Image (cartoon, rainbow, N blue to C red; front, top):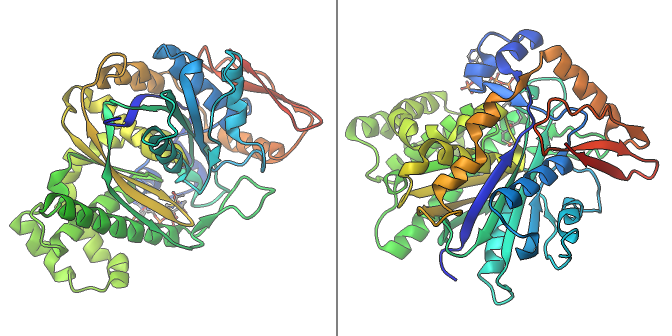
Length: 448
Ligand code: ACO
C-alpha cells in the first residue's frame, strides 16, 4: 500500500449564519473588533433542527453518493467530535443507519475526542489501519463534526459549525508523508467542558492562545528535526507550499504563521530575507515565555511574514473566516479552502498541517499532493464540494434571532420529550434534520 491518504472529501455547514459586523454592533463591541481584531467575517450555527448527528448523516450520505461509493466498501468509520450528545453512545453508531440499510454491519471504529483534535486522531486511526496487517482492502471513512457555541461574552463570536467527511485509502491524491510528524501533548486547563449540563466550554482565552503557540513551536521544531534526519538538510518554510492551521479565528492563524517565520530566523534557516532577519534578530535572545508575551515581536514578525502569509496561508482562510471555528472540522475546512482556491495547481505540492486541541494535544504533519485519478482527483474533489455554491446559498440571520436560537438550544441541551418545528425550508435538499427527542431521549431524524 503506497501513498495512503485522503481519496475524497465533502463538507457540510449549516446554511444559517450571522455576519460578524452585525454581531459587533449587537454586542456593543468596538467597530472592527470581530472583523479585524479576530479576523472573522461570518459565523454559521445550527438552528433547532440541526446538530452534530444530522450534519454527519448529511455529509456521509453526500460523499457516498457523489463519489459513487457503495456503503459495503467501507471497512472502518471513525468520528472526531467534541460536541457531547451522549456520554456512552457514539456518533458513529448513529451513522451505522446508512450502512446497515445496505447490509454492512462489519465496520470497525468509534468516536475520538479531545477538543478540536479528535478529527486528527480519527484520521490517523484510519491511515494507520490501511497501512496495517489488519487492513481488509476496504476504505476508511473519517467524519469530523462539531457545533461550536459559547456563552455570552468575548468568546461568542468565535463559534461555528460544520461536518466534514474524508475517504481514506491507498493511491490517494492527498497522501500522508508519514515520517514527517511532530506531536506535543501536555496537561493544561485552557479550554474544557467540565459542566456536563451545559454545551458551553469553560475557557481561558489568553491561556488558550499561548498554549496553542507553544504547542505550535514545539511541533514545528520536531518536524524540522525529523526532516533533517531524513533528508540530511535543514527544513524551512520554503520547503512547503502551504501551511494550514487549526483556525479558532483568523488572527490566531496570522500570529501562528508569524511564529514559524520567527522560528526560522532563530534557527538561521534560509526562508527569511536579510531585511526580515534584521528586524527579528533582536528578539532572538528573548526567553520562550517572554517571546509569547512580547507585542513588538508579534507585530514585527507579522509584518515580516506578510508576503509569505499571502502566498502560503491566505488560500486556506476562506472557510474558517466565513463559517467560524468548526472545532474538529476547522483544520480540514481550512485545507478544503486550499483545494477550492488552488485545485488546478496543486500537483507536486507539499502542505503542512497543524492540528490543535485544547487540554492539550497537537500534531504537525504533512501531505504530498498529486492530481489523482477520477473520481479521486483534486479537481473533482473541488467540484463535488462546491464551496462557492454552498457559501452563496446561505441565509443571514440578524443577531437577535441568533441569540434567541442559542437560548432555545440551552433549554434543549440534555432535554427529552420534545418535537422540533420540523421546519427545513432553509436546508438544501438531501439534508438530514432532527424531528424529535422522545421520552427515552431517543433522537429521530428525517431527510429533506
Ligand atoms: N478594531 C480592530 N482590532 C481590535 C478592535 C477594534 N475595534 N478591538 C480589539 N481589537 C483586537 C485586539 O487588539 C486583539 O488583537 P491582537 O491580539 O492582535 O492585539 C483582538 O482584537 C482580540 O481582542 P481581545 O481584547 O484580545 O479579545 P478578547 O479578550 O475580548 O477575546 C478571545 C478574544 C480570547 C480569542 C476570545 O474570543 C476567546 O476566548 N475565544 C475562545 C478561545 C479560543 O478560540 N482559543 C483559541 C485556541 S483553543 C480553541 O480552538 C477553542
